[in-house]
Amino acid sequence: MIELRELVPGDADALLRIYSAEATKYLGRAPMDAAEARSYARTIAASAAQSPRPLYTLGLVAAGDLLGVVKLHLDRPVAAISYILRPDAWGRGHATEGVRKVLALAFGLLGLPEVSAKHHPDNPASGRVLVKAGFAPTAEHAGFLTYTIRPPSVASSSPYNRSTPWNALSLSSPCPSTP
Image 1 (cartoon, rainbow, N blue to C red):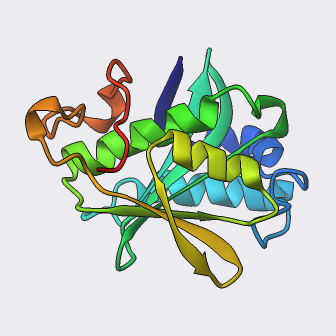
Image 2 (spheres, rainbow, N blue to C red):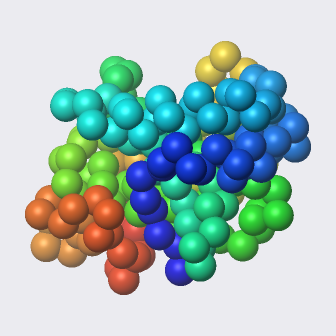
């Protein structure tokens, strides 16, 4: 089972493995070097204290091992999810589970009306993650395929609870598809 947690400065070595050349291939960025990983870990840990919080950058952890990062960007016209996993964690459902947990945060605790995501067309596995998590394809924009998801319309059947803190979210209920 996947857990989400705040990143801490001690995560720099794990971030270096996550933001590798293979994992960043379709992100339009270079892999992290050691200095960038240390700076990123410190910056993200400090930004978690901001209020209101414009960005949730959460570690995706399985059995105590930091496998990836899932972000919820609130500083955009439409909130957006992004994610990255180290290559040895690909193909095991970890990204889908992490995205579902962040959607529970977005639609439950934060009460957002919509969340978007995108991926490079040469990375179809990322598109499968989004579809499994309930996103619907919407268009192509600036060379990326775009997706959107809205919360379920029937609150009584929703797995999203506004009173549950994000770090206590579980996947006991599957994330519904877009209505």
